[in-house]
Length: 213
Image (cartoon, rainbow, N blue to C red; front, top):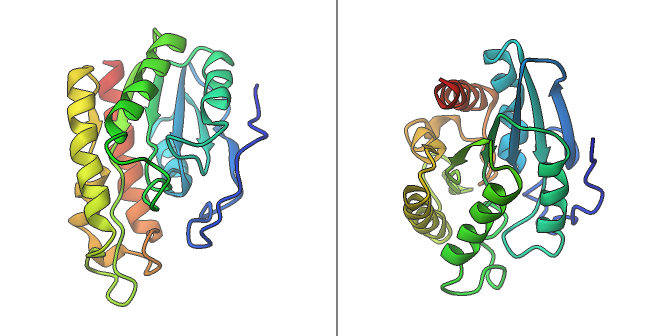
């Protein structure tokens, strides 16, 4: 099993891995079906709850701080995809890409399409599910969205919806789920409490089960 060893260190101290370091997490080692969760600290928060809802599934999470222009993202991704046969790949990348200069203006859509193309090329038999980027909340008033930063997230989710529709990939709308439960925000702008992560995990598991029907 490939263990990503070059994940960049996240410079934003608020974007820690939220429950352990970056890297590969073998959440549930055995099962007839193999599920790969690709995501950031939010994925790290809900991965255990996904596994609890999927008894009999092998569940692996690749928790990383990458964004779509990160230097080693694609080389690590390809190694991960080629490491074994994945029945389902549930993927998200976005919460680390909002800072100015990381994603050039107008490049989010083609960069995200390139990610989809890579997944289809190296995991052609896998069912793909996109997870929308979760909201950025207001630090002083954590039960509302951040007026400066969250519009970036909302806009990219709209773009991602178009990309996924064009590619026939279902969307796990974690963004809307969070908006309906803002009282469960952690209060640090990015992360959530255990009850919210559990809700994300349950919804994610349902999407995975549906993809395999």
